Amino acid sequence: MVGREHGAPEPSLRERKRERTRQALIGAAAELFARQGYDETTVAQIAAAAEIGTRTFFGYFAGKEDILFPDSDARTRATITAIADRDPAESPVDVLLRALDTVAERDADMVSPMAAVRMRLIRTVPAVQGKALQVQLAAQREIARELHAAFPGELDRAGAAALTGALTGAVSAVLDALMDEEDADGTDAGRLRARMRQATELALRPWRAGGDRAGGDNRAGGDKGAGGVRDAAGGRRAPARADHGEHP
Image 1 (cartoon, rainbow, N blue to C red):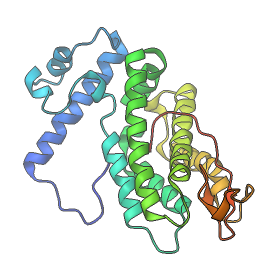
Image 2 (image 1 turned 90 degrees about the horizontal axis):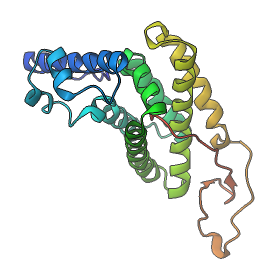
Image 3 (image 1 turned 180 degrees about the vertical axis):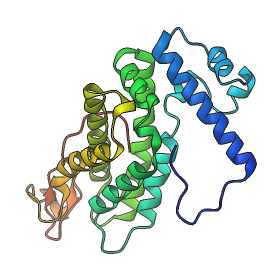
């Protein structure tokens, strides 16, 4: 789960009990998916393993696919909060890297048994592949919209979308590669954060101030072209390419 924000009130007893039940469901699902397979596991089995009723399960998750991505919405909210709380001196890249650092520091789901199971299922189960793409695209659209609104003089809509896609693609690629190297239970959280930071800095390098720039706008009157980050002279730094995967 994504940790409590600094200065947020302590959760109530009811909230703590609800979170324990939620984590029990996530843990039960991860164990069952790993042991007997995704298609072979039912919601009823997950609920029973967590010692709750099937109807109660649906008070936490809409179905099996949703329990695989338990903290996706929280990661998106944390990124949007970082954009809203930006320092005037921060660039779009600075804001996204700070958001990634915050999420990686607080989000236990990114280094967990469920993370390892999720990456394996994304590779092998079409329904999970489809859900992963749906989750990522929804997050990218929301983050890109907020990024464009926060930096209208630097990013057009396509540029904001490309920058966001580069971030999520880099994070997804690192997580996928690390799951190949070792299981999630043995993954060092600090090492994971360092690898994600390294990969995202590389992916976002074309957007850094003073980076390589593509040619200026060819439209009359300097109209916005597709997929650009504007510089003071009206030119555009070339966007990076990104793989699709899990978002920050």
